[in-house]
Length: 312
Image 1 (cartoon, rainbow, N blue to C red):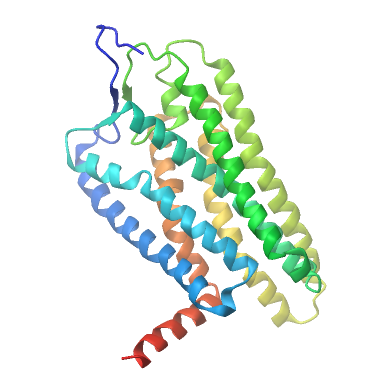
Image 2 (image 1 turned 30 degrees about the vertical axis):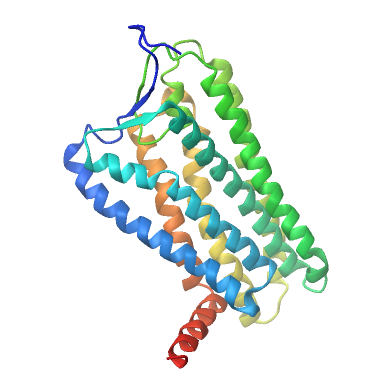
């Protein structure tokens, strides 16, 4: 690729929030706090799932995968965004942009699929309790987690190759804080109708098929729970699913808004703040949702803390 003046194309300018300089310092402080909580919260869940034998179950295996994924997800964007918020230089190299798009999109797609897999796990636990350990065999859990990562990054590879094969005609100012497909399509100097259709089709598969699986799983779960005569049993069953439903609503709601609306109605400013939500805020609140609403995790945390105090 070459710029219009003939010089070699070296990279992009991420405009981010430079049109709102008064907002940059506020965003820097807020995002730094959120990022630190993301690191702390998700690392805690991974450590607890490893240290407490009671958490060596399929549910916490998938939850550990989700926490690791969220750690990588935020780290692929936030450190660079924090630097850009405090400096005038908003440059990202061409290779850096390609890598960021591939990793960010791959992790996002993987999370979409993984949340669907976690819904199936909850369905098996509540609707098939006697066969649960047989159905959710460790090999099957590992296979489903691996498949989530494989298909997530497979789709990301396809999208990344397709977007960077398009001519940019020297345009290098991305009106976003990261390299994301909708923002990059705005730079393309040829008709992108086919690419937008392909992106929409891929988004439907990655987003809506897991959503359909989640709706089906929870439909079956509700039917099974309503058959439980004990109100305490109903509360316990719904409690184990409440955290997952909350996470699903937060993540899918914003992702569907970003990728499944018509391009002509896509507002770049709204897109930035929506991306902030599902790329930074959701990974931060995931550990809080799971720990505050989950007695197993809070119990494991107390055990580890008590063990640490007893060893002093």
